[in-house]
Length: 470
Image 1 (cartoon, rainbow, N blue to C red):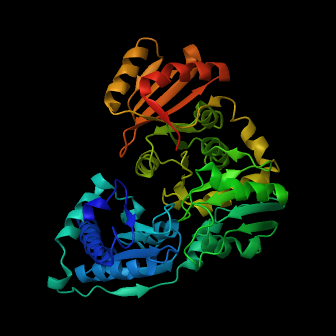
Image 2: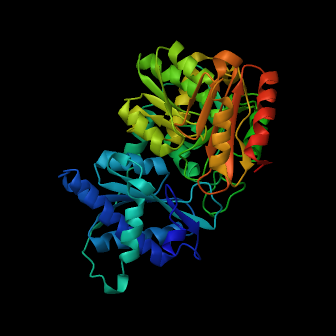
Image 3: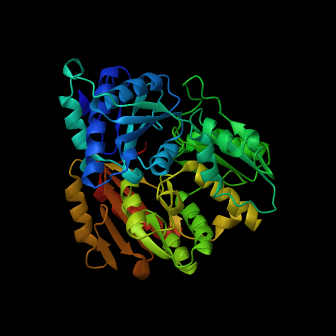
């Protein structure tokens, strides 16, 4: 049964049929065994390296699952710093702030309310995925039997870190003279707790800021809409409110508040790659010459604008595991990907929705520009968005595309799927990636003009299978 809930980057399933309380205890035991062994193997000798941070979201099942997870950690001998209900980035903060062996966040992120799960991080909040420890945790958990285990007596310490966390996040806020009215849709999830804590009720803690709050009540464990801001339909409320209240811009957060999307003052959805370019300029102004990482699906304009701002563009595979790895290896000041994750050097290379919010507030307030004007220059090429194609022989299709364009492309690489770059010679490029879990290929294409984009899509589509919209 455990194998059904362990995914590539986390543990997730419906509660209580697939994910049970008993499994939470086993996973706690397994996570403790892995994280403490990992810290010891790295030569970590700090007494705090015997401790694991545990946080949880607002789902109805989270208190019980958190309690069982903690019991499992303690049974193995791991200590627990229990920071209670919080957003996922607060767990990343706590691991680093307290110098712990790792942390576990009880959350199912953007999934429906009957789901729950666990996000595991190790030292310095580095993500734990299938190849970097999650397979070991699954193995240790499967071998753990509560009835025959003599508890090793790990300690459990509830701790309130909100004061330190608020101070940390506000360190990214540099408001100018311009007053701002901003709509925030918390999706009835963790932003409903973290945003008022950090920015004050309706923005009262920040001079010159007014926040119009939507879906901030997270006490019922239900959602007014799916807490996934990547789906345009889920942005309907924030877009309507921006127009109604004549706001400067709007934000919508996901379930555990590690991601956010922005809409401009006209209620247009801002692409996260375009926002990456805007925020890159902000951070490069303070750290000239620094590298900035972006996911390889991003517009060509992102790398061009990073270079124009004096930075070094670093192209990355899709996913927070790879983005954080690049942040660390290249000492990047900032990073962003199309999923709405934004990463910050001064946040331990980790992602944070509320720090992204603080950064956007800083840019708009200090420049005095409208959001639409800030992104206008970046939005200079035509993009397809991600298009899914259903096909059984994914590898065969990728090989066919590579054969077709190999001789006439400026370059082809396989960093993540295949990227065919004909931008200099023919005015277009594309990336095609395989789904890890479905018989799907995911296409992202971009061209210098719409006519070229339409032509390329017409050429590529027959080679990739049946188009599906979901």
